[in-house]
Image (cartoon, rainbow, N blue to C red; front, side):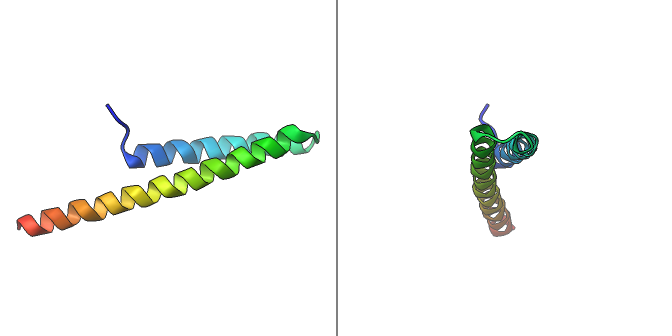
Length: 70
């Protein structure tokens, strides 16, 4: 079954949090790995934001449909 936008947004938020934590640990040691992890965290955060917007739009559409049925 396909994931809902809410589930995808939550997944990307979790991935971003993990990547941020890993990047913070790597920054103490230096190297390109920390930079790459920071980039990944940013990408995951951006995807989470986009999925959150989709979920909100779908929620608004569902509410509009329900209001029209009344």
